[in-house]
Structures are given as structure tokens and as C-alpha cells.
Image 1 (cartoon, protein in one colour):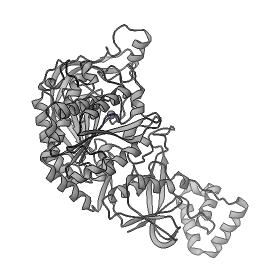
Image 2 (image 1 turned 30 degrees about the vertical axis):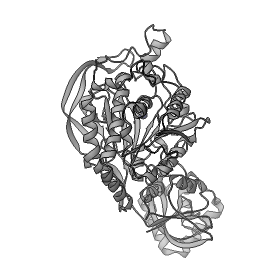
Image 3 (image 1 turned 45 degrees about the vertical axis):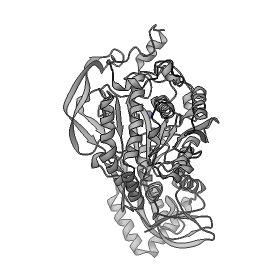
Image 4 (image 1 turned 180 degrees about the vertical axis):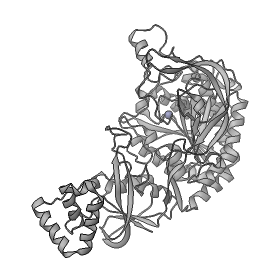
Length: 609
Ligand SMILES: [Zn+2]
């Protein structure tokens, strides 16, 4: 899941654990609904030599990293079309693997570009406890190799990352995800560095994320699937999904890709899932998780998430969320159907997909939407396929809690709201990043943003920003968020003549990644590098003036500059607090003197309009 809910497992969990309650760890979950569907036929028979490790457990458990990779190596050794290659290392040194499945059996992601077919990239386990995608992908690869589905590779390539957050995957336990019905052993949400990889797309701090971005650059996928499991509340849908610009209700940075997803992808997914016995729906969150009748929220997310990031890079990106209260078996089968249908959809509508991506990559949108709100868009209604519930007063919380009853119920005419962008950024011609920010230049490089490096100093007239009212850690209290001190700020435009030393870079926005560069470098964007705390040093003032020096200086300024004197007197009359504060009064003069630090709060990146 994407959005923050309870910071820890429910209290009942600890009570049951501490009292040694005899039943399984998740016996406090709501009732399960019986399920049967055509997708059950996908499960290998016990005597199938290529039965997957999870199928051996009846799709109730999931293999560890070593067993997963060993099984994939065996499959690759027996199948010329399928290769297993390293694309990076985790913080603890584990190899990150990607499976390359192609008709010719190419050996590197970069070589896929030569065969001209669209590539589907699916990643499982960015949140490694949500691992349905891994076991579904293994089954699909087996069926491509030995189950009569080799023709899936006739018109598309399949890239599959079985375990993205591999370190988290090995922090395995039966006690990791109290909201989720299996598998028995589940990985941990964050990496070994306690980073949530699905917040790391823009700041790219984690080695795993840096490797993934490199894979996106070299493989150039035509469709990117990010496979998750969601909790939150009970409902009938077992497979929900989302992408930027769904239904055209919200602006996206890749509008052509959104149209392709609306027109070709979504109808195909929904039809295939329904035919296989699943209930597809759009991914949503409740407005209030104690009262569903208040409505639900869907919509675009910021580029810290896969869908927002893919949109900025012009890679059609889909978030898949299976429903945590459905049994593991049902979820894996739904994910299998989704993966296979996505591969078919890319195959059947590859020409339209290629045209959409090309159109978005050459477009240079004047306005780039950022700072997505949460359920603040226009209200519509939906007939939600929900589950009945009742309220009761919990002796543990002392307030009304929800008890899901396991009975299907349609919530007719329920209010649903999309997210709205809080800001539309205006695209400039270029940015000038000084050599003094090597970590910023390094991030641009990781993302694949093109820039020109200055061989010698250049003095240019640029627009610059002075930060206005910067706030550290808004909404996060005092603790860091994802190991960073995040920042929100306003920005006042100034015109300056600035010298950029050799080694500084000029980033033109006239490139396919111009939108991404703009969001990374505009300080008012929540997921910009300013927003992620890469520029915290400019918040500090570092030169001062003594009181016995500033008082005579101020007196001289009053005598020398009648205009300043008038301004000061107006301020005194209008602002009583100021008039009574000697330090503030002297500071007022210091800030207007030539001694003042004119780089205080000055964002050191130049903007060329
Ligand atoms: Zn997730």
C-alpha cells in the first residue's frame, strides 16, 4: 500500500502475542469469503516437474531469496528464451536479479531495444512483505517456458524483478504483516537501511533504487508494473490498480500514455480478470477508515511513488494492489492473470503504445502538475462493491471501531474524490546547478537527465529564488522522514548576475526528461531535491553584527537615506510588536545594509526563462 495508516500493529495483536494465544497469528482478521475462479486451473499439478516453490505449499507460503533464485536459475538453464542477470546490489550486498524473457533469449536488458518489440517490466516486492508478484511471476515464466505460452514472447519482451527489496525480503517472519492473509512467511516493508523504496524514486538514496532507475534507463520499458498488496478496509475487489491520469479526470505529465492505459489496457485487464473469476477495481483509500460512508479517495500520486515517477519519465506505470484480506492463493492467481494480460495488451496494442510514449517524450508541456492533494478534487459517486460492517465500542481503544461481517454489500452512490495538484510548475528553458552541489549533480546523472558541464566559469544573468517561509519536517514532528529533513517552502523570484564555476552544469528542459528535471529543481515542488533536504545549508545565516556596531550604522542610514527613514517610520507605526523589539529594529537596518549576507535563503540554482 502507498498511504500511511497505523504506525504499528493493532493493540489486539500484542495482547494475543503476549498471552500466547494458541491459534494462528492472524485469527483476529475479518471473516474470509469463499472463492473459486477459472484462474485456479493455472496451478501446477503436484507431479509437474516445474511446480514452483509456492505452488508446492498450495500457494500458502513463499520461498526465501536463495530458494527463489535457485529455482529461477534452474528454469533459465533449461530455457533458451529466459535469462537471469544481475542489475545491482542491495545495501547488504545481495544480488538484485532481473529475469529477461525474449524470443531470441537476449542476455542483457540493453539488448532488448534491438528486437523492436515493446518490453513489459514488472517488479515484485518493492515492499517485500507484499510478495504476491514474485510467486505469480514464477508461475507465468514456467508457463512461458513449458506451459504452452511461449507465443507470449512473439510480440513483447518480459522483464521480471522477482524481489526488489531483497534485504527486506530476508527479514522474514510470520509476524510481519498483521493485516495480511498470507503467505505464512512475509518479508519486511523497508530495506536494510530502513528506507521505504516506494518513497525513494526522486531522491534515489537507496542502492536498490539507484539500480532500478538504471534498469529503467537501459531497458527502456514500454510498460512498468509495480506489484503490491493493500490493506485498509474490507471489500469485494481482490485486484485493484491505479495509474496517473486515470479516466482523464486529473492532469498527467504523460497524457498520451494515460489515454493508452484508459483505452486499451484497462478494458483488457478488467475483462481478463473477470473471466478468470476475480473482481477488479480502481485502487482507493477510505476518507475515514472508521466510517466508509464518508466516501473514498483515488488518484494521482507524487513522484516519490512509482506511478508519479513513471509519469514524469514518460513510462506508462501501473500500481497493482491485491487485497490483503483475500487468501494468498487467490491474490497470486489474480496477479498472474494481471501479468499475463498486461503482456498480451502490450503485444496487441504495441504500435499505439509506442506512438503514445513517443508523443509524450517530445511534448514540452508548459505546466507540470505537482504537489498532489489527498481527496481534494471534484466529488463523484460510485457503487462500491463493499462488505457489510457494524460498529462496536472497543474496550481497548475506548471508541467506536469497525467490525467487518464478511457479507457482500453494495454501497450505492458513495462519494469518491480524485486528488488535485496543489501547484502547476512553469517550465523554464534551463537550470544552472553550481559545482558546489555535487550530490545534486550526481542525482541528475542517476536519473539520466542530460546536461552540459562548464569547462570554465560562466557569468550569466539568471532568475534565482529566495526561499520564503521554509518549514522543516511539515507534518512529521521532529523525527526525520525517510532519513531526511524534508522541507516545504515558498519562493520569491529575483534577477541576478551569477558566476557559475567550472564543473557547474546547465540542464536544458528541452529533453525527454525535462519534466523530471523541472520537478527535481523547482523548490516549491514537494518532491524536489529542496523538498528532500538537499539544500538545508542555505537555511542558516552565518555572519553577524554586534549591537554596538549596528546601532550607529542604523543611525547613519536614517540620516543618509530619507526614503529608508520614511519606510522605517511607517513600519514603526504599523507594527507595534516590531516597534517594541530593539533587536528586530536593528536587524531591520542590518538586513538593508551592504553588510548583510545576500545569499541567505538564496537557492543557488539559476533559472533561465
Ligand atoms: Zn506496498
